[in-house]
Length: 260
Ligand SMILES: [Zn+2]
Image 1 (cartoon, rainbow, N blue to C red):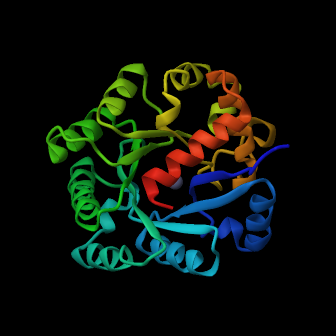
Image 2: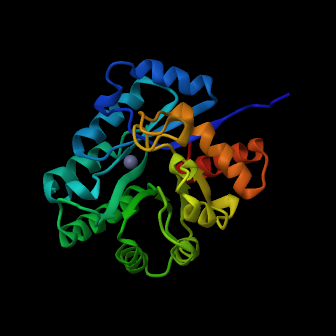
């Protein structure tokens, strides 16, 4: 007997245009693959609104509200006010994705930092965990979190983790969860796989970041939540746990962090 199969995709963007033609079929395929729950993550004000709307239409979909650091320059006081209002919706389980991205970003680092701090304040005020985006900005991301939490543990997840073992050590010390996407299955992701081996299972979450980063077997195509099984399988190998154990522990972690 397989038991009660259940996977949670803690980070995807089903509101994106890439899903306009077959959104409901994608959601159905996810359910059939055992993905009983997804968190649709807002990456702009518009995306956050759409995420909340999508979540209201499906029991299996929850929402997160925030603005991706690439759009930091577009964030006004009005934007923050609107996001705060959205955060009160009962299907909203996190603030994100928010953080810093210094890889070819159209937004200046200084503005990104200011906006990130405001979203951290919102996460504290609304008692919602953070979904943190950090690309090529590990030092500043960690420093801001340390400063704003003054040594207390941070309730949140480092999404699409891309740091080395030293960064991982700091992230774990701060009490954060860590999630990888299907890019862990890429042939050239050897270094990342070595880092993934060091994550204690009780701090691990799964995510697809769909439509981005489809697993190696679908490389270059659109990603979707059903493909999360590829990620479960590679983590099962890397951590020396059965596939069922990976499912159980990551699902428990996601329920605990997001209160779902
Ligand atoms: Zn994302």
